[in-house]
Image 1 (cartoon, rainbow, N blue to C red):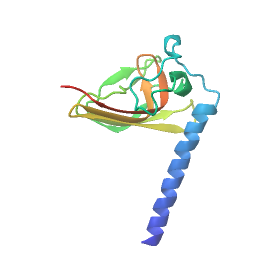
Image 2: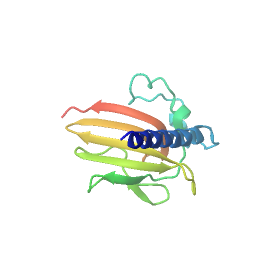
Image 3: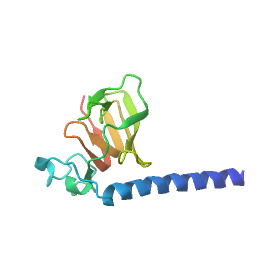
Length: 149
């Protein structure tokens, strides 16, 4: 039992290190923001209070689009990337959920996670969120919204 716990702890540390290294490469790896000019100095209006003061340009990057949905609702809504490829819409419709991965660069071994769900008018998301309208990624998106029916 002790060795199984040690393997689990090591696995969690390796996964955390991998994700941390991926975020470090995305933040400091000479990747352009990809942010449209009209959003460059705008704060995030849809974030938790601790993050709402940050300008979008601090956390926006032009990563490979669209993201790849690994798990999720069977009839999930789709959006089109600038390349013409189709990927999952970032904000699920009511009753839908997704776990997606975002590749940092073409031929890169690093992927960033994104988890989102909407149930009973409650929307939650965390991870690297794709903006399917303006075609950029927010690296550290965390949001909890309660929609009025």
